[in-house]
Image (tube, rainbow, N blue to C red; front, side, top):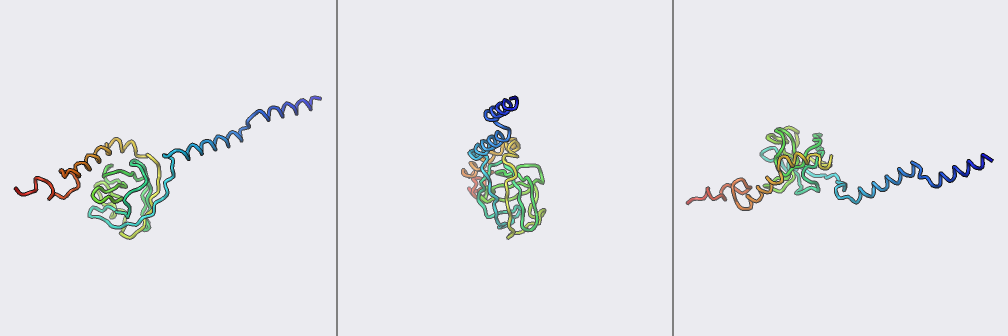
Length: 183
C-alpha cells in the first residue's frame, strides 16, 4: 500500500512542477525573442570592401560612403595582404591617443577610411591600393564613453556647420575664405 501512495504523490508533484530543463528552455526562448526585437542587437553583417587609395596622410580609403554602425562602436579589420586591426573605434573624426588607428568617415570626401592619429596607417600596416578588406563589428558601443568624453558629436556638427558657411576651420578651399580675397 505504501508503494501506491508514493507513485501517486510523485506523479502529482511532476505534473504541477516545472522542471529545471523546461524552465531553462523557456527562458532561453523568451530572451531570444527579446533580443531579436531589439534594434541595438541587430546583427552587423561583415562588410567586404576594396582599398581605393592611400591619401597623402597615409589614410586607407575604402570604396564605402557609410557603414551601418554607430559612432563609438568597435570593429575588427582584416586586409588581404595579411594586416589586421583589432578593436578599432569608429569615430566621425581624428580623435584618440597619438598613434592609434581609427575607422572614420572623412569629412572632405565622405569616404570611410582607416586613419592613424598623427601617423601613417598605410605605411605602418603595409597596406596598398587594390587590397580587399573585411570590416566586422567587434563590440557595439565599446568606445561610447570615449566618444562622449572627446565631445566628438558637438565638434563634428560645429565643423560641418562652419564648412557649410564657408568659415575657417571648415573643409572649403582657403581661396573661398573672405580674408584671402583681394580687396
